[in-house]
Amino acid sequence: MLDKKVMLTKEGLKKVEEELYYLKTVKRKDIAEKIRNAVTFGEIAENAEYSAAKNEQAFIEGRILTLIKIIENYELIDEENKDLNFVSLGSEVIVKDLKNNQKITYIILDYVESEPDFGKISTSSPIGKALLGKKKGDIVEIRVPAGYLKYKILDIK
Image 1 (spheres, helix red, strand yellow):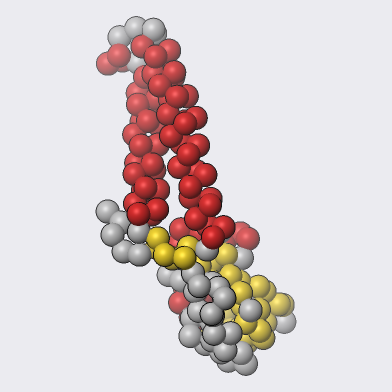
Image 2 (cartoon, one colour; image 1 turned 180 degrees about the horizontal axis):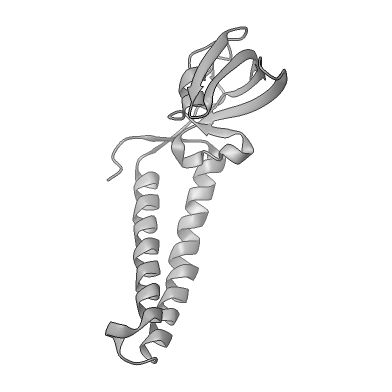
């Protein structure tokens, strides 16, 4: 399943732990209640509510197992001893899009914490991969599904 180390920030670890707690304490009870209610609708084999509740239960149990594996295999990103000369895991990178002259800020994280809509990108994404190891002033050309991006790294924090 998930046997490699997952690199997390303190904030990311807290979110994983909170989600796991919520799924175990709240969602499991909700789904059990849905299953109990669905059974009252009659024949289980032809009961859409029962099938939907069982599918939701399977999804939640799978997510719980994934979160447990993440917690068993995490390592905190060392934010205090980070080399700010190069883009690395946990870096906040300010780039300039050379095509439209726009400044963009990305935070490079492991896939568990990535939220592209909020500028948190995974090390396995095309942009994350391309920025890793680069330094301030570098120009990076990145192939993305929509074509190519050309960024200049303005700052690393």
